[in-house]
Amino acid sequence: MNAIAAVLLSMGHPVSGSDLRESAGVNRLRSLGAQIHIGHSATNIGDAEIICRSTAVPDGNTEVLAAKELGRSVWSRADVLAAICELKQTVAVSGTHGKTTTSSMLALGLTASGLDPAFIVGGDLNEIGSGAVWSNKGKLFVVEADESDGTFLRLNAEAVVVTNVEADHLDFFGSYKALIESFETFVAEAKGPRVVCSDDPGAANIASTVGECVTYGRSNEADYQIIDLETHRYSSTFGIINGGRLIGECDLPVPGVHNALNATAAFVTALELGASAGLVLPALGRFAGVARRFEFRGEQDGVVYVDDYAHLPTEVSSVLAAAKAGNWQRVVAVFQPHRYSRTAELWRDFADSFVDADHIVVTGIYGAGELPRPGVTGDLLVRAILDAHPDASVTYLPGRDQVAGYLDSTLQSGDLCLTMGAGDLTSAADEVQTRRKVSEL
Image (cartoon, rainbow, N blue to C red; front, side, top):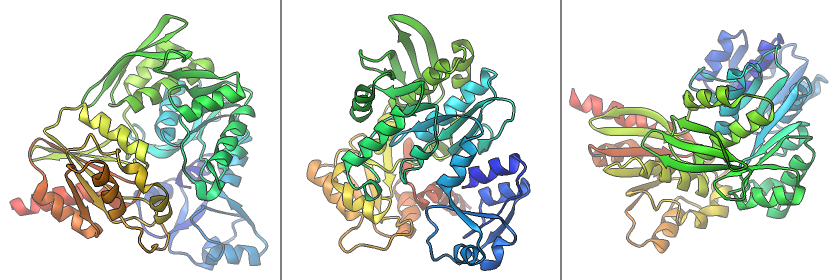
């Protein structure tokens, strides 16, 4: 919602809104000219012609009710994003994970190639401090296409990317089969290019079913194949071949196989849209990362702190594999499960997600507005991990307020403290460092 508001402001529309609390995003929108209220009230809607709400805002919200009573238009996030997409040639990046990083890399690559894309992505690019840019010059609009509520099917995208497809958001789709069918529709309706990862079974099956796709990955079947991949503590290097010919070498300033795949997806899509490899690759080499994607959060007393948005089993595995390649003395993984519904559905799938961690800390569940469910706690993940790996070193902290104190007493020089989750665990790194600094005084 923040990124959409920023784009609307750049287009010249007056924008107002409300949020539950102050934040950096709220302050940034104010600096761009938006009037933002803290707290929800019927008076907040003022004379706005359209009231747009996120999926987190219920029908009974006081501003939504006031808008309907006054006969104002109430739009969903998907409604307003689809309306913006009508103004340009939309390039939609979708998948269970990797969307934000891939779309960010793609936007930077297209920008470096002089194509002046507009873009909306789901995280703030560290390079510019925002996840949204509107440009009237170029014809391309790069969008992170969210499948969680079916938004990606409404964007009328001309070009599409699918990074991977796994069983998630089944509360919306009803079944994995329905999810797959939605992705197939998403790809089939695009005129092209259609760029799909061949390494991911779900995505590869969609490419095979739909046809006329350009594939990328490490597999020999990929149209664009990653070769000679090396991943290091803070970076990765690899080559890309097409038709048996080396077409580029990438020095990527972020680690992990998953990021090499994300970068290759961005590279291939940019080339298919007319960009030059000689301009895209240097842009990827300058990629400064995205907030909450293996984001460096400080170093103190020999402990390095990194935070990541990973909250699904495969995401956790990928991030920890990247961390392990850094040859730390210990990787201390701190994970906050996200949503009671998701935890109830997926807790068993986390059994092998933490094999690259030396010590695991699991916290209570971040509900994200959901009510607690009987018997659904973070301890389910602990049981899954220990059932599969009885010798694993695991600590369960049911209270979020216990995390900083525990880490303060546990972390040692040479450790990587890696916090993961889509909730409020992101501030834990700052809390521990502040606590340790105070104790030194």
